[in-house]
Image 1 (cartoon, rainbow, N blue to C red):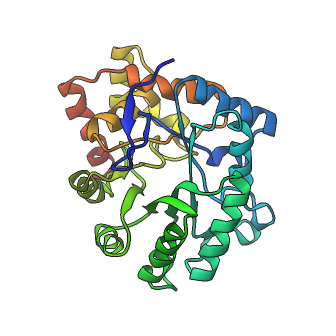
Image 2 (image 1 turned 90 degrees about the vertical axis):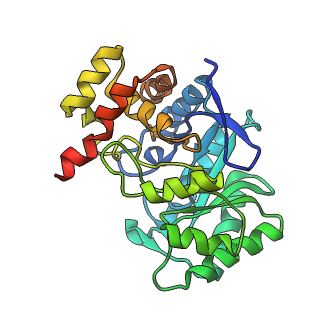
Length: 288
C-alpha cells in the first residue's frame, strides 16, 4: 500500500499520514514478541513509516526500553523508518510517575540510544512535565542533548500552550504529542497554536485510549457515518483527525496486525462537510 505522505512539521522528514504507537506491544496484555514484530511489519507494509515509542513503554522499571528494543529489532532492515521516542516517565513497580530531572533525562537519552542502536535519535520528546522540576530545566537538558548531537529534533508531550511557548524560548520544537480524539478536544488550543507555528501535532489515544478503541462504534453518530462509507468506526475517527489540521499525524496503537491494517485504511476515507459537522459534535454530546 502506498500511503499519502505528510511532512513531520518543519523537520523536512516525510512520513505517512498515519503513524503507529508501539505502547500496546509492551504493556500489560501485550502480545508475544513474535506477534509484536508481525504487527510492526504489517504497519510497514501499509506504508506507515513513523513509529512512536518511549523508554517507559514496558511492564515496570526492570525492563525499561522494552518497546524501543522491540521496534529496533522489527525495523532493523528498514533504516528509513522514523522511530520517535520519549523520556521523562518512569515505571517503579509498574506505576506511571514523572522524572524530569536533568540527570535522569541525560541517562534516559543514553539508554534510548543504546536500545534503538543509533548514534542520534531522530525525534526525542520530553514525555511529561514534572511538577517537582522547573519545566525550563527539563527542556534545557533536552536542548543540550540536541547540541551534543544525540538528538536531531526535539518534541514535547502533554503540554499546555504556555509550556509550548516557554519551551520555544529554549529550543526549536518540532512536534507536540498530546491526547486528542473525537471524544476529547481538550488540547484543541495547543493544536491550533501548533498549526500557526508549523509544528507537527501527534495526537495520542486517537481512538480514545487502549481500553476504549474497540468500543467506539457504540457511538450512534460514529457508527452511522462509518456504515455510510463502508468503513470501520476506527477509520472514521482517524479520518476526522486527518481532516482537522494539516499538521496532525495520528499514532494509533496496535497489538495485532489486523488492527493497524484497519487503521491505515483511514487515509482512503473521504468525509463530507456534513460528516465533519456531525463528528465535531460528538465531544459536546458526551460532555453535555
